[in-house]
Image 1 (spheres, chains in turn cyan, brown, orange):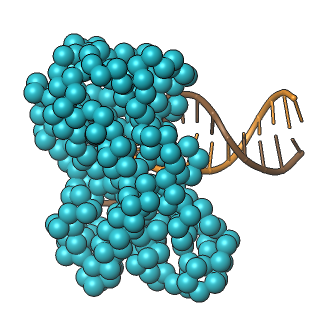
Image 2: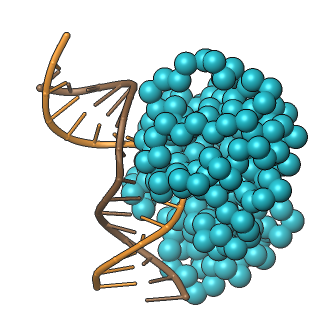
Length: 270
DNA sequence: ACTGGCACCTGGGCGC
DNA sequence: TGCGCCCAGGTGCCAG
């Protein structure tokens, strides 16, 4: 479900409700997420004040004075602010209950998400090998060109690799490659520096626009206020196989690449 | 070191 | 209406 814009939309939505608030209790209804929710996490979090909520790639980091909770939404996860008294429904796996009477409720039908505890996020195994943030200065054509040297895989798989750059999932990989006019199957090492610069710019532009639109709601993504995003109305290629290219009118092609559906225009993308 | 493929899990949509 | 099949926004891990 969530790529960087959806996670950022979630972060912005929950931060005003959580930051500087004290955690009154933690309710874990199902510990069976991608990795088991640690037994000690309730004790670690109870009584702590949330100092900040940060995002690193698709991870949300809840900082306290004694450590940081890591939340990943997986494919189907979402977070809402509820009244503590509101009854939980199926797949509502955990609540962070605040002294204010509100709670952050995490729901994840497929349970690919995770909720973990770390003393030092920088050195955590899930975070330490992540590439740069796509919206940072360090992410540019030179960086991509350097990383692509000597590698044979397709550009789409390359930019979806979080060790190269974080936050780009299937939707935004497709959209960014279309915007940059690059064929998703092109070998990453064969792409010139200037075209890599176009790609980096396209990634930034697509992600910024999606964040402004509150993310993409294909089926069930909701911001923390329960409202859907509306970037799906602006998708140029994702989910539009056979439909006309918005640039040239030719029917868009769909192929499977790395087990993911891949949409592109064979006229506009080379 | 890189690459491709599998695994984890539930639910929605489709064709028959 | 029901069943089986395919697909889905992610990513760690394994073998080659």
